Amino acid sequence: MYALGLVWNPSKGIDFGFFTLHFYSLMWIIAFLLGFYIVKRIFKNDNQTNEALDSLFVYSVIGIMLGARLGHVFFYQSELINDDFFSIFLPFKFKGGIEFTGFQGLASHGAAIGMIISMYLYNKKVVKKSVIWVLDRVVVPVSLGAVFVRLGNFINSEIIGKVTDSSFGIQFIQDTYSKYDVVKITGIKDVKEAYTALGSDPKYAELLEKVPFRHPAQLYEAFSYVFVFFILMYFYWKTNKSEQQGFLFGLFLVLLWSVRFVVEYVKEPQNIERADWLLNTGQLLSIPFILIGLYFMFVYKPKRKLS
Image: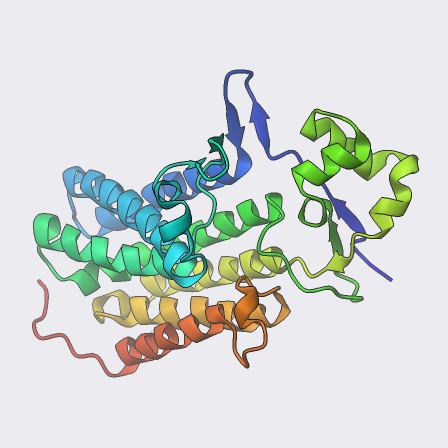
């Protein structure tokens, strides 16, 4: 029995006629705007200038987005380097004809690496304190941003979970049937209308039954990251741990990547060639981050104290 029993078949965005605002893109926009608001409060508490805040926003957007995209390519889809190089940096697919796709394929491990590098450059050029001091503060909004990114993945029916007979199972129609499949099956040329018909028209009930129930792994992660965010907020605002350089950064790494490591057990592997590995790619990449986090929480001693 499925408690949720949800047939997930949403629209991918808001159609303005000349432009479609994809909900996945909207989730990223919300993540950055909320992050800006949270960091503004934190920087005000730490007596930092508005100029420093504005620069941080620019460095964060470029570092996180570029790192996320390159991380996906290097860790999960390296064939793009030879097969469709320009699609790595542009929101288009060029192989087999030009097609607007948006930026599909963003890896959180790459985003983390990009964030660390961009914060190093930001600290060197702008605040000139310590990159660890900066990271201790930006990880608070980043953890909340991760919630919205996973909600975007859920809307897109991507990074889905394994087939399950548990009470949390959800049918992801758009994962089982691609837009090309659904147009061919229904004979309806409009993709949105074709998906709607497949999900609601009784004559397609047999096809709908072939869509398996899967773990909503994206929601498991999003829900868990909410707790990571509130834990980090608590330690920053209610304790003196923000004065211990590296603690909040380390706590973020341990909590967020531990969640990722556990949830990976109910996810479909993103790289089929590594599906039979004892630990999948996401788990193997998470372990170093967790170990680094423990180091910054309990071992790291800064070379100099900040005023």
